[in-house]
Length: 156
Image (tube, rainbow, N blue to C red; front, side, top):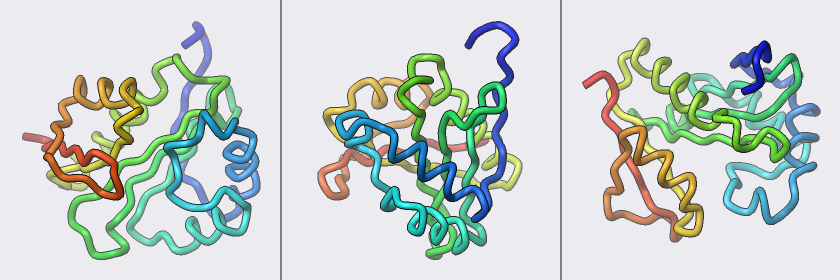
């Protein structure tokens, strides 16, 4: 990150749907090809944020500008192990925001006594897979819709 550029993780609310949707829709199709937790239109984003009770959504802000979105989902569907997801806008890529997002999500899980995090990564997304491996995630051998399932123990 550039010196003096503050990075903040801000809880997202339904009122943030337009800004989040605009960021996601601005992404080139090739860049966002492996990120599809919900449709990128404002209504779909708003619906996901409105439905969240235990699921967590944060905006990544850099210098006050929305640079990404971080998610821990699955709690609202009854899962004890949340699924981590992150999207960093292309103009902010390569600055370590994905790693920072993973650290923030891990800290949140530790504080809430969540003992494990899971994620899925597309086999072609080798850069992300390396980041996850370096952070302690291990491939389970499972696949979900062709995506590699990885898990990490938290607070162990």
